[in-house]
Image (cartoon, one colour):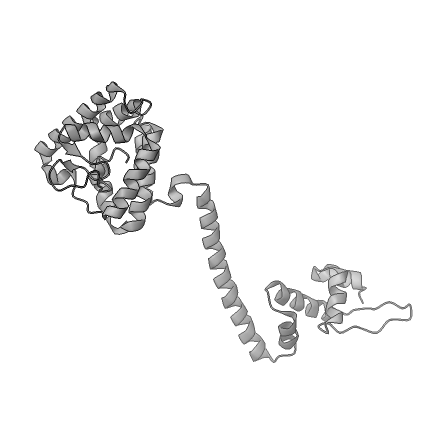
Length: 275
């Protein structure tokens, strides 16, 4: 025969829990022995383990009481139902764990893996982190707006960064970011970008420069963010327009029906300086 402390130890609960289950009518209270102590048999251990297991599974104590008095079939059906609920909770908790883990994963929290890979590649190629962040911030609304087009845009981006001229422009742009918007040295990056776009258009056609459709409101959001992030960007666009091209997010020939600085995420491939 077991004391209440021994019973609690065998069942993996506290003495207080045993008394609580007594008070709730879940576990019968044995009579006291001649010394005034309650003594428990092996069946009490089994019953207490059943109570603890059901309670830990989230079963309300009122329902536990019902199940303890149920027949074998009803009890087995209830256990199956509890198991199904627990499986669903486990799946949901795993999803929460995955989301929590992504909080420490930086860009991958809001971007597809191929975009994250592209951003990491820009960093590896020595592109200024401010430009990488501008690219990142531009891709977030793009990926949310048209996720089905991300593989297509990324294929073009990978093609672009394989061109030393494109990376060279990004590096030059990085050097220009620290200049005031009235700095005459911004003419150099503007010349370089215009030359790059002109050469690319001659080699691949103007449609290659901008073949991604993005709605004007989204273009304005992306352009505004780029101009706020990189103050010299607006002046660069003005200088670029003087050289026959216009646009930041959405790049195109002046007079070709393009918005003043409108956008294609990619502007195509956007040579979007902002990314």
